[in-house]
Image (tube, rainbow, N blue to C red; front, side, top):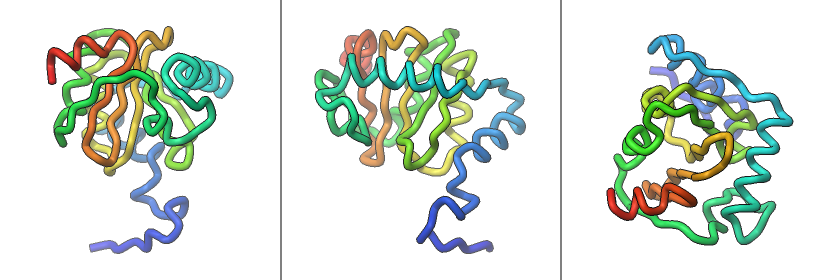
Length: 154
């Protein structure tokens, strides 16, 4: 068994989210694209403008303005139902991972998330019509067009 010191997660291979995404995508044969920095910043700026009381605070889920939440350790798997066959963007708190990833469907993103090491994440689309977040409290939060879905689903 390999043991890692978690003092510096930047040096810990199990905490390298990019490598986890690459490995999971390769293993599962799931295509994805790393978003250009300008596109990623535009998406995050739009998300903060639409859904946050404070526009520069991370983690952003602490400052959501209007959302529905469900506490369920497996609720992240429901994201596939909402996203369906539509493209979606996966991003993280910048302290965990600075890149954003574009996936072809909800099934693809959920399959990759299943392989990740316990991390908070956000899923939206290019129009930022919705935002889904799963945090370290095992809470799935829905904003925008996803509110009614989670309110009914949860």
